[in-house]
Length: 126
Image (cartoon, rainbow, N blue to C red; front, top):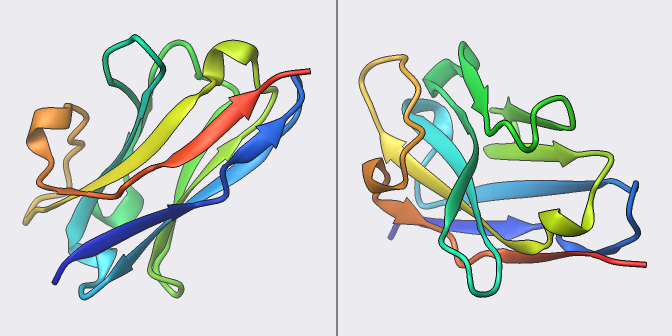
């Protein structure tokens, strides 16, 4: 069974950092495009960042550009999201998603993904 598990969330003060990890079980992430999404209370889910199979391309939402970095760690079978300079508006449940693909292109829309984790809570507050 294909499963994704997010970890690394928590409570952090504004300006702080967190590193989220998305770990796969039952499959290797090498052949998958990966996306990170978030959903804040009362808001729709939005895309945060995405990375192509092989890690050749990445993309970021304007709201996180320059603060967040997505990366792949094939040895650990994880995809990480380094989040720096966190703001209260970054507070949300963060989800990772995977889609097996034979091409090295970015997939950044939530409808393109068919394997989802359960999410990890990120709270930015003083």
